[in-house]
Amino acid sequence: MKTLIIIPSRLSATRLPGKPLLKINGLSIISHVFKKAEEANIGEVLVATEDQEILDDVKQNGGQAILTKKSHKTGTDRIYEALQIIGSSNIDLIMNLQGDEPLIDIKDIKHLNNLMMKNNSQLGTLASKISNKKLYQDQNVVKVITKETLEKSNFPEALNFIRNINNHNKNIYHHLGIYCYKIETLKKFVSFKQSINEIKNKLEQLRALDNKIKINVAQAKYPSIGVDTEEDLVAIKKIMEYKS
Image (cartoon, rainbow, N blue to C red; front, side, top):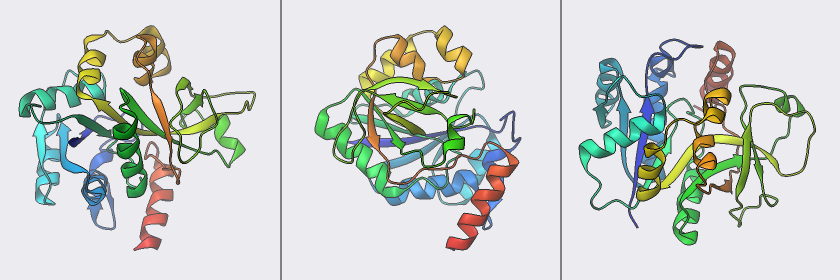
């Protein structure tokens, strides 16, 4: 089976303007993510963006990028346009990697790809254990509730995705911004209108659940921090500068 990684990215983030081009260790966030995706070595990597500046930055750093329309409401819709532009005749799986998670672990990307192939799943994503209780109330940290306890070897179904939760039930995990779709599942997903749930919670994966598309969840070894705020950027910079 052949996988293509597409990273949707745009400059008009509301909470942290110009986010993809902010630099860590002299390299933009989007190019850090792109290089991580390449290192995973599971297939070709492409950035899909509405901004010429992002396209230029990715290409300057040795990556491939494609310009899409500005009208997309979600990253998945943007990915689908990119796929239509390049054609999908020999691709089986599309990996949607968020452009603001430069700490995503390569082994976790590979693990998700392997489980998708092994289980012939429609749609898969990653989640990690919640070690810090404060994260339950943090609106920026998306939680996923799974049918069974999440373990390294299993691929349980997601029951729901939420932003904050009061009672710490079992099987609640920290959701990571990565999706892997079968081509036909992606086509189906973008054919549906945004659901009320999706708009209310600002979580596009709810469109899948609301339309009876099953999402399986793989265990990520490491929680990834997305860059949503100035504080996130400072935290990630510290980690990445220390690692280098």
